[in-house]
Image 1 (cartoon, rainbow, N blue to C red):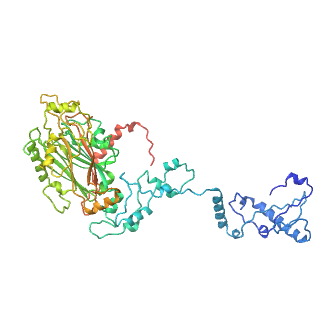
Image 2: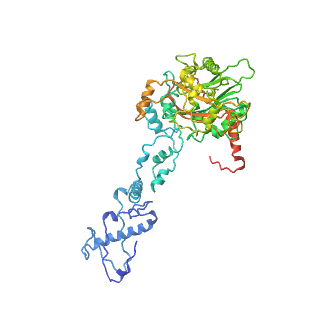
Length: 590
């Protein structure tokens, strides 16, 4: 209750009109929640309420006895009485408690909360920018796309049953939003920064599909899973080749394994070496240590001084077939097999790949011998052995969707050394891509590709780097020995692909706005050498490709997580040791 103002005490006598509506005279309903505007009072005033109730009952009796005395006009139809200055029975007006809440405590509580929120909390902002956000996938190539046939229901179901970690978005900070956003909005923001695990509905896991080539309700290698893992149905492939000259690699291999010119680490990384160092395990661990934990060694093989290793992103390993390898020595009678080829093949979803590295016959004039080596290799490699091929061909390169051939092919430039040295000294590298190469018309491999004498159907990107052979080891100088070998492009990377099926072409052209022709199944994005490595008389060469991936069926022999565990663990151990983690304090929160 409130006390009367001092000014009213000095006025002698005044009339205080108090509302005595029937609702006011009823017993107030005690409540735990109080409205800031006086709607419902707190339970701490219950004793005061009882006193007020007694006063109201007394007032009711007084009003009944003095109905004829009307010195003051009624207020809102309620009866009033005059009060004297010393009157201790002043009536304090009780805020109205709604009748419908008298016997429903919980309803009153909820109503009080709702009224408080409506009055003091502004409405949540509508974040239209987050409505169109999709899942963040393992592959960085995310673009707007159509739902795959038969995969729409699965995608909607997975979106409904998704577990998120709420995170603060940088977009909110930039936009100046001070109000909290809903959990759904925070979940959408989390998709921009982290991988998410889909919750698997139990009824979906219990389903069986008896269609050919399906392990469950949906195919593990089918279109729906492919769209989920690779939304653009594309991967990037890195192919590197290096004649190591029998020397140990340098401690720092980033320039070759992780070129600074690339924005992202490719999905598949292949290294082919010739005249490799004797320690095969050490070389593989060096590659693993440089790549880091994101990639694993799917398979490797060797023949004499030839070595081939295929690394793949660890989240793609479950969609690979079991890798196979084959080899051929073009000098079977020699004790040291330095010339020949080795190959590794496997499938990713429904696309088949063949990777070959070779070391062909040397010397300037032996072009025919090199062509003969290529023909022997193509018709002798028995791949694939466990994969089904509709039209198996004796040419191993015809049995796969994409073929990548790298190595020391030993083709030379048909120009005198003096002229080549003069051209190199007066030329600035890298060469402009829009201008023709000044000496490639004298390149033996370019002539062989044009004539179709070997490597039929293969392509090579434009060369813009200087010749990769022959250097004085430890320097950037071309051969200064007594042999005075002429510079040449001996280290090359070629690629070949099958035409895409009509259905795949139609799908991709419908998704690619503004493109009137279907894209090539394999495109070379970069082709370069590594001038900073000087341990060998050859420079490493690498190329980056983008390849289209097709959906497959589950009948292929899966790798099922197979990879070289020993190389991975040793590479990670050395990576930790080199970073000095043993001597640093690390706070690990799990």
